Length: 292
Length: 300
Image (cartoon, rainbow over all chains, first blue to last red; front, top):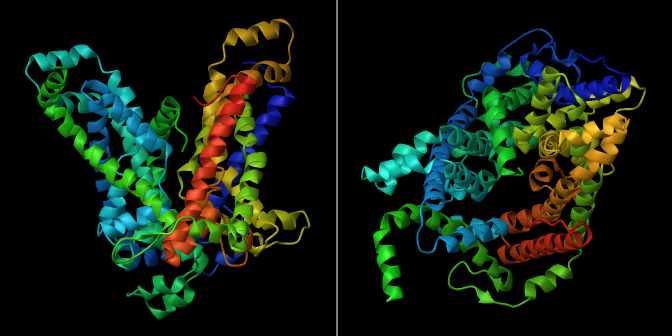
């Protein structure tokens, strides 16, 4: 191994400090949420270890009906949404990548036009309203049912499946739908996993459409509750929903720690999936040349 | 005869069309219909019955409204600040990361700096509100260490735009560096070998090989970013906004949200967002052609 010279050392130190600037604020919130409520005031913004130790914040948050329900809402939207995304995207990608039909060029041009021109917020809102989808999960699931960029990425994967396999199936008398479900889908599991992560992260993080489409607090996804509690500093609607909590527990609560706990809860699924995300997502983003 | 042949083919391929149908229905419903719906900018909205055509009325009101010019100004200032201070950061970061030869350290750095990209702006806003807390947030702890007084960045009109720039760096610098890293790795190693034989230092190699080879990628990313110039980062502003600083970070998109969704002035808000969209298209086309003139490279 070559000996490190001073300029390399500087680069290593700069990069290490940058990595700390990302990690410390996150670990600080973890420490805050796990600190003993009586000692949390000793914790300052650069500490990454809790002062004392207590799970009271998570106990309170996980006994809060609003939070618990919002977690299930988000899980439902994310799972159903992602499955629908994958099915619709894959079916369209199969047709566009592996079949010839009258009007195919027209469809591709149509998709490119759609990719370039984003409609505005208001016509979208009015459409959802006119369709009677306000206050339904369906509005959040259908609104981004197919992402054109991802569709093009998947088409590129499908084009790489060898012709011989498909020909063999065709000779055995398989129709397009059968080839799609029995051959294309199983053969492109890595590609589908990649896109599943793309779509899954999108659904998990979605808050804005939910803010304008959903008005019933029982249907709020986690991000909307998080926003209300942490960004808008609205403690009342959250704690108002708290049912089983003794008075001495309420007295000992520290709101910043509760907020920190909520932030951490909403990050946990991403952190669990992060190794997978790094493996697939980073690769997919490179190959598709996608931004965002 | 030819027409008949086409029809026979279409009838034979009905399964294909059936499989394409759900996608087409989706795109027409959720993309084409709202796009056509942008015509609302030239109408008055009616809850019952047909909307009434009013020509350029909303645009006239828009262009004579001081509030609109305030948000337009904020949008341009914030986007320009990001272009100047954020845009070079991922490039610099990629140049630093590529110098790391130790595989484990490089993997650690990359894994950490990509992470914030996957967090929603709600989460990031939460993290930054805590980080910038005037009492004991991390940034003020550091300031106090250097004998500087604590500052309440989130409610300071002088600082909030910088909060936008830096939180953008925190979230996107790592992820955005990927595209440059990929481009650097595609540069032929023989170029560097030849330079080393000629006695070029690391810095000279960066200046005369890496940067020139990166120009195409940089131009492309720059033009793509210009397409989002008028966006200025809606989700970010939406979550970091508060009443004390509204006047300096209210941008076109938050304005459209407020007058459209909150105040229900649908047509007027649509006019504002149509204006925004037009500027975006002009910016992309304009820079594309200028760049093609100057460097021979455009987006397409």
